[in-house]
Each structure stands twice: as structure tokens, then as C-alpha cells.
Image (cartoon, rainbow, N blue to C red):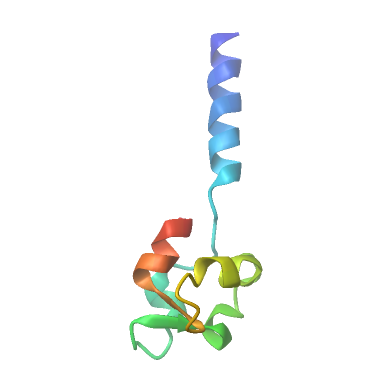
Length: 70
């Protein structure tokens, strides 16, 4: 039973974390230090959360904004 509880806790934790197909540097195609909507569009999971992650509302995700979701 203890093993099952650990497994459930792990699955719950994993499900609550955002999982994106690529890391920040891979998504920042132009290397400007931010992920634009166009760059983010290659990752459906990131696009679903883009507006929530863009806390300063500038239309781009900084590395700090992106890392809050990881």
C-alpha cells in the first residue's frame, strides 16, 4: 500500500506540472531571450498557457515567466 501511495503522489505531482515539448532555448528560435507567440505556437501545451504565463502582458515569455510553468 505504501508503494501505491508514493506512485499516486508522483502521478499527481507530474500532472500538476506543465510539460512542454522543448526547453526555453529551443523555443526561442531567434535567440532574443524571449519566446514570442509565433515561437510558442510549435508547442500546443505552451500555447494553452501562454496568456497566463505572460504575466507582464508584453506578448512574449521571458525565461523567468517560462520557468514558472516548469
